[in-house]
Image 1 (tube, rainbow, N blue to C red):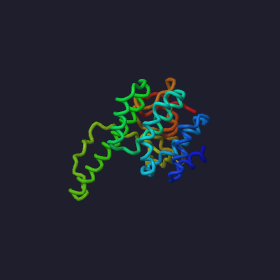
Image 2: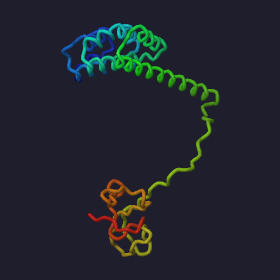
Image 3: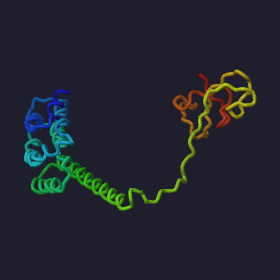
Image 4: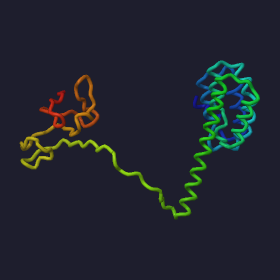
Length: 224
């Protein structure tokens, strides 16, 4: 699979032609190998090499959909759609093909999804260009208003395992016994703790609660 991807990803016209023929015309190719070839064929930095294949794509659509199985046809139609071109010509070619052919609903849906991805790419590029122009006008300073910081939930604070030394215990309310080791306690709201079979499981947050009562809700914490 890696070799098929590497051969299809080579930035030469001969490699692209061989990859196209392998993905579209080779009926003995496995689905995994075909996907590797398609992934290597569609490289974002090779748009110039892929530009001639937009016309070939729409010319081969009808034959691929009629002669191949449903999964293979879907893989070819979706994977080789010229979304990397991301221009108005690709969208116009899609609309023209749909208007000229009585395509099945499944094929029309796949082409409509490809057209929607192309349109979204164009919108993102336009928004990026507008933001860059606004930044150049204002000297690179973002003057857009910031949303208020209200309504956010307070983060859960975990107390680290530490030794207590007399009255200077880092855990409020813990027993002040010099040299004793305390397990990690998680100070959180009773409703925020994950529930598993009626017990509070704190593994993944800060370890397990120590012995005694959970400080958040007054019920006993589970033991190991």
